[in-house]
Image 1 (spheres, rainbow, N blue to C red):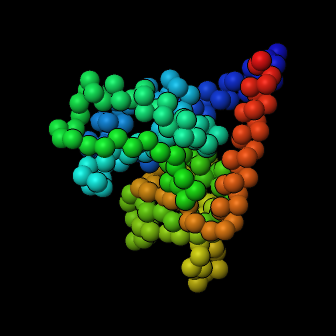
Image 2: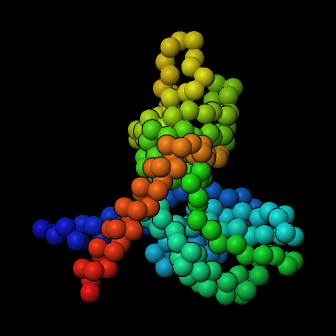
Length: 205
């Protein structure tokens, strides 16, 4: 039989390689494919790649640990790992600023586990393809059932059925809505993750 540590290690690997259902297009997709292997090798997950016109041209690469945390030191590690990759591949034909960041509190949700982790909190989302003529939704995350997000709509329908299933495979964009409850929950989750990391480090010494 496998011991508990082996099971936990396997779960970490599965969490690390959980696929994203919200992915980039065009040049951002090319950059994602270039940098993701290096990010995974460090034990982090890619959240998003985004090019913007901020301060000239900025390439933002958002990453996190499988538990959702990301420190300043973690961002520096990722930056050191992917900068040489970008220098060699040279995907952008002009000068740009490289920015490595954590997802933040009102974070984008790109994996099924992201929704499962934030059950009870508000999300605003846009589907890739309209559902019954509607593309944008806002409501409370009730859970994940198979391949569907269960969303409790803020604008309750006339038929009195507030909870609707939305296919995760049809998700174009999703982001948590900033609330006091979300900030409090995010702080608690970060503290718990740090305690767990400190405990694991002490155990390995």
